[in-house]
Image 1 (cartoon, rainbow, N blue to C red):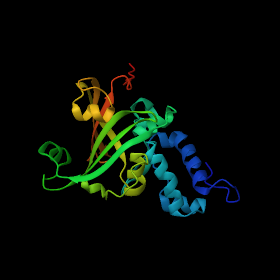
Image 2 (cartoon, rainbow, N blue to C red):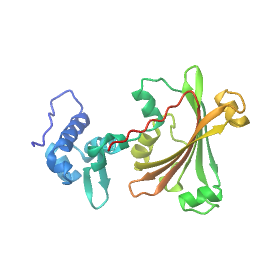
Image 3 (cartoon, one colour):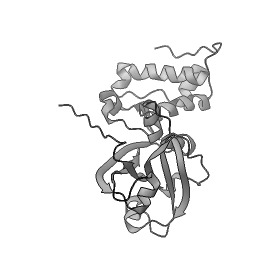
Image 4 (cartoon, rainbow, N blue to C red):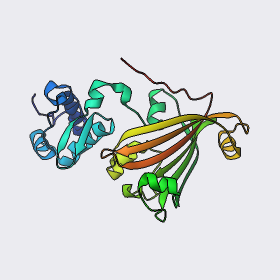
Length: 242
């Protein structure tokens, strides 16, 4: 494959680079595990800056198409090639794909001391504060989910970030932290006073409770997320093949 971009085209170079990378991903040799050319070499071939190239690579890493590891290189994510059923998105991305306009009814960011359970998950001491983010979100006329997220201090979040952006895009682009693995637990709960008030439902009404454990490329914990959904607003679909 010829590595070149049209520098006279009105299409931005980072978009052209992204398209070239998508074509590379489709090549059999790269799907079989061959590493992509390193950033220095590829940027030189394309006559673009490493910053422009990195912008394109970051986009595909965020989408889960590429895996980038220090001192190893960048290669195609084999899990993505074999099955898209394992992919997962942030809430904002899920809703965008469904064509649903989302409104933030509440957004609160605080620093808290973790309890023993949370500290054990993050593998830190209970005297080390973590960032806590609470969001009530839903359609323009009604909320339907209440999220509580805790983030590992290693990420480097300050609390001043624009959390209206898609969360995992923010972590990837601003803090070089790529969320690659999510483990979830789903159960049914009765809404207590706090949850009922957040979701504008009656105390005791059913809600779906989703607990999500999120890890980075090194399978280090980065987010502990709790989600409370109105029971009539959330359907969880699992696709299995044999």
